[in-house]
Length: 221
Image (cartoon, rainbow, N blue to C red; front, side, top):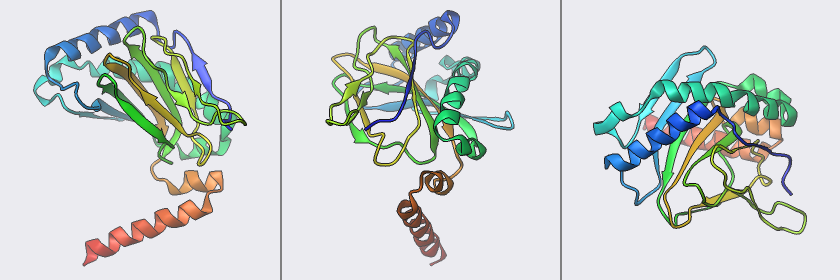
């Protein structure tokens, strides 16, 4: 059964959202990307010391169309909602915050991403619905005690926030007959071990550590 989550309508200012939509249309119409597979167009990390690392993906020939400052402004407006929910669900995890991760995501028509749990490094996960006007919202799997799923209805400029929890917060998403564009904004830790310890997932911590040791061993060979 799912714990609490947060849904915020008109999550960012109208001015920022209009700029984001305009940029989305520019990206889609530029021909710089393929809409035949799910793609991350921009990945930005804003660290707690205010330094910023930006990775431009899939648009190497069209990087000028991406407004990095726009995404920084959006992250500043969305981050407080993420942090408030994190403090409600897992207060101790705030000490693990390393950076904010922002990604502009594009999925092709009729795309399906199966049920999954977010990476343990995600302290608080958020997704902002952008385009089109009507699509399929994120689906919270096994939402209630009877195992029913719950779709968080799609509405442009709606922001869904939740804190991942192993074996609890399974979710999935899909598109309809149109391209699906979202902005993902997450509060991130630097590793998986400490967040899993906070959740009491000692078995998973052991697996993560053993995998790290295995990778190190093969590097030394």
